[in-house]
Image 1 (tube, rainbow, N blue to C red):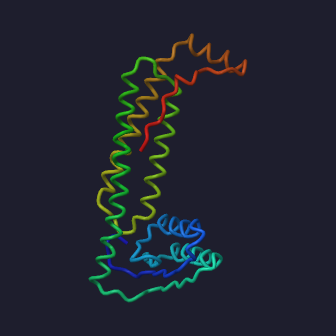
Image 2: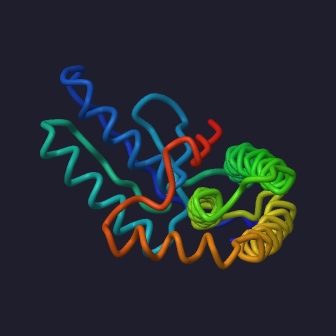
Length: 208
């Protein structure tokens, strides 16, 4: 929607206080699609066809949980209120983009640390490949709910490109460091269904 004032979709619901897992489920589902809470039990989203379908599914689940729910398409907000809502959406996505950006910085530092090590190899490549995949999926999820073009989006795309380039160089360097003798040893271990690396060869992943 690129920051334009548009049409909205309002969800108003109540749920029994117990069990709390039902309330937590609805909250997670709404935050997953990027809903903004106006107050407890009142959430708003831009009115888009795929979001309407998802909100209807959440509403059905609320009724299954013995709650009450109303889905109000096109509620009447003033332009001033709509612009304030758009700012809320952008602020929430901005915080998420910043989290991904910092995680990407940590990834680049981890790559540099591994490159400086003398004994890194394919287990390290696998770990970094898994982390890079996690960063990509995380970024894609935020982009999917960034309805109004939050700041930092391009900055995160740029650093992800840097992460991908750094990983490719790291993987190539790891490949070049594997000697023929090491390759032959790994092949023999694989034939015998043994292990080609020990647990201490594999670094722990850094926490977010």
